[in-house]
Image 1 (cartoon, rainbow, N blue to C red):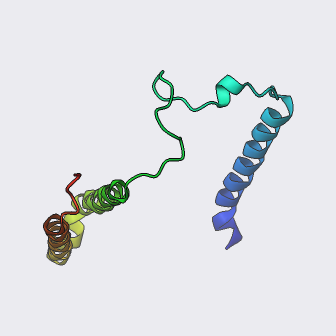
Image 2 (cartoon, helix red, strand yellow):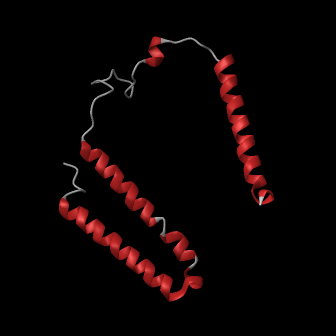
Image 3 (cartoon, rainbow, N blue to C red):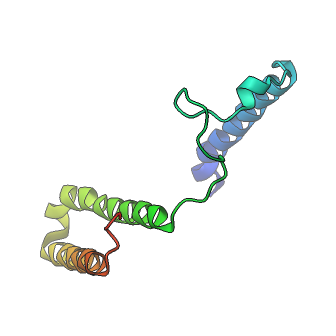
Length: 118
């Protein structure tokens, strides 16, 4: 069983060694100077208007999560479309059910006002 996973383990090992080596080189040989101008908050060339640690509205996070959720669900359509001939009608109806659930969820979010930004 080990020969089947040897290339994966080798890849992970080499990646870990190279990553650790590069981070160590940057840490030990990089400039250690801290410049106050470089550590200051930056906002499009202007002085920051508010504190960098200000709270965002919860609605922003809800819209972002909904976008990621629907975006990831749509990515399931690509492998389904490629394998449609092999999976036949059962796969077609399963994807139809999946899309129906997706549309019902979208309509529910729309009716609850989850997509309104104001």
